[in-house]
Amino acid sequence: MEETTLLRERALTVEEAASKAREEALSYKNVIADLDKEKGLLKTDLDSLQESFQRMKVEYVNSEVARGAMEEAKKKALEDLEAERARSRSLSDDVDRLKGVLLEKSGAIAQASKAIEDLRVANTELARSYREIEMANTKLVGENTALEESIRSTFLLSNFLFVVCLVFPKVFCIGILRA
Image (cartoon, rainbow, N blue to C red; front, side):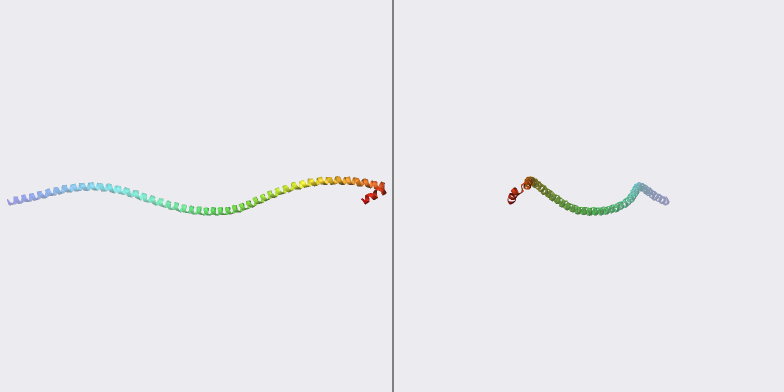
C-alpha cells in the first residue's frame, strides 16, 4: 500500500501541479488576451503616432519651404524697402530743390509784380503828364493862333504902312519911324 499511497500522493501532487499549471495557463491566457488587447491598442497608438509623425514631417517640410519663401519674401521686401527709401530720398531732394526754385520764382514774381506796379504808377503818371501836356499844348495852340492872328494883322498893317511909305514917303514914314 505504500506504493499506492505513494502513487496517490504523486497523483495528487501531479494533479495539483496540473491544476496549478491549468490555472497558470488560464492566467497566462488571460495575460496573453490582455497583452493582445494592449498590443492592439499599442498598434493603434503606433499607427496614430506614425500618421502624426508623417503629418508632422510634411508640416515640417512645408514650414521649411514656407520659411524659405518667407526669407526670400523678406529679402525682396528689404530690397524693395531700400529702393523705396532711395526713391523717397530722391523725391525729398527733388522737393527741396523745387522749393528752392519756387522761392526763387516767388521772389522773381514778387519783383516782377513790383516792377509791374511801378510801371502802372509810372504809366498813370505819364498819362496824367500827357493830359497836362495836351492841355498845355492846346493852350499853346490857342496862344499860337492868337499870336499868328496878331502877327498877320501886324503884318497887314506893316504892309499897309510899307505901301503907304512907298506912296507917301516923307509924310508918314518919318512919323512912323519916330513912333
